Image (cartoon, rainbow, N blue to C red; front, side, top):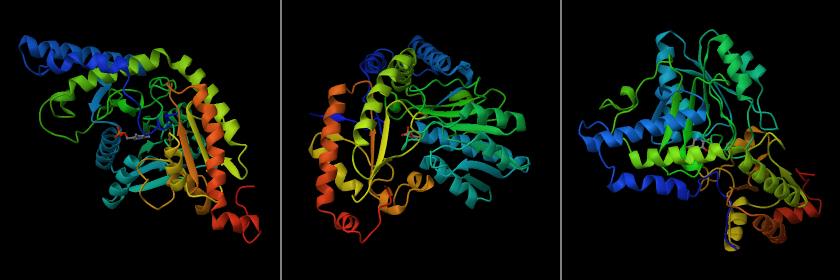
Length: 396
Ligand SMILES: *Cc1c(COP(=O)(O)O)cnc(C)c1O
């Protein structure tokens, strides 16, 4: 059996998205900035795609800025808020310790440039509270940026409450919603979100395309300068096939949101139940306030990397956490942020499901993963020490 259970890393581009894109390579191939009819056909498609995306987020088309993906949207949001904040003498930014690296590494750069960053601690549940954000806000705070749903452990943050706090205190609020959009309900107006990042390849759209939503009235600074595209905020000829594919994928995801979520939650909960039977295992992240397709465990006494290789050999594509940290020997900053000690943070497994996964696949994983964990433990000196009482279990 071949199972793709790494949908938080990327998703398969849907048939709907591919079919929507194809005409924009060789039929409607004009440059939307051209005045002739070939260009104008492309411009019309761009208008429509932008409107479709706006409708899914509950905003206006002119509040949608196309980017090359989630990373660029995150970089632009932070840099822009920092730039305009500094102009008013506000150089303090609040975020969390378990953001995506597109946020954390940009914040690190901003720190080097003289900004002060407060990273809020995350509870063991993988959540922060709006009150903690409120308590951290200072008169010189120019931005709060909190991930909507964590890409490793899948926990969903209280975004509407945080949005309300920020709006009340007059501080800009950005959220990296790359894992959330297309999977859980997102309404930028109702949630008082000023800026939001999304990425098409996380909801069955193409790779290399995304959006930064910016509420009208919020100043936005360009990262890429050149032509007048994206209302002068992001230069470069539009990647129209990708934009159309993104809009088609988002429209489909939003139309089926409840149905897909219900299906995924049933698969997720069955998988969690099955894997919880493994001795000395722990589910990471809150049990219910988590993405419909996210399952994330730590298993004591094994190495996540070896687990992944053996699972791959058995046809299961999984991840130890985020794609960005694989290859490095450091344990995931997300797991450390929720208080998992190093020795168990290394033994992590993330399974992220999509609508394409089946109950049969879940049963196969429930049968296979405990066998592989047991096999790895049988060869592990750490496990032997635990069993023979020379070490104490971290996970009871
Ligand atoms: C995937 C991801 C990103 C990066 O998006 P790209 O389009 O791959 O640049 C940023 N934030 C989160 C939470 C993600 O999951």
